[in-house]
Amino acid sequence: MSAKNGTFGTLYLVPTPIGNLSDFTARATDVLNKADYILAEDTRTTGKLTRHFNVGTPLKAFHQHNEHKSTPGWVAALQNGQTLAVCSDAGTPGISDPAFLLVRACVDADIPVVCLPGPTAFVPALVTSGIPCDRFIFEGFLPHKKGRQKRLSLLAEEHRTVVFYESPHRIIKLLKELEKHCGPDRWMACSREISKLHEQTIRGTVADVLSHFNQHEPKGEFVVVVAGKE
Image (cartoon, rainbow, N blue to C red; front, side):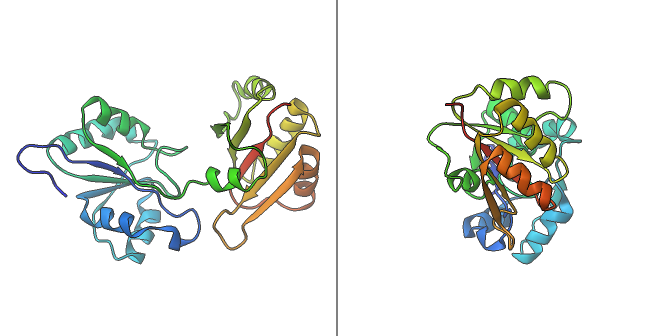
């Protein structure tokens, strides 16, 4: 895949399984095999994936702590004809994961950028929620402190469906905040462990879902889907 005759290489964004390894596509395996380097959010996590699919391409760390510093070097590598594949730990790079800075730099430099279709946690959670998904807002992770309550207050007035990511350690906090800002009767769905053995979606009012997780210890990463204000 390395470019010749002075032309640029291509940056590939390669979605990785969020649970079931069978979700990894043949095309994704082919891209990883033919790339010059794989830029991995965590080389240990991506290493397990590459070993499973017999991919021998060298891995290089590319995460939120080094992406600002390392992006210019990778842009130069692409300009020199090398092809790079970016993998996050799970899901599509750039969606609440590193990749945006590198993509923007490549776009500014007229370097080809290709994103393969594949796993993204919020899509199955949204589609199976039973909540309208024709118009929605994806918020990802809310800020932990500064601006969090103001943001929730604004989103409570949103008429479109709102989608969040949340960790098991903060899901109760988020549900209590949604109860405060949206009211206990707002309809919602809470999905966890998507594409894994214990995949589960809890649907109901905010009060219903909060009651469930007050009685059952939250485990796994969560996608929270909240109906818009009527």
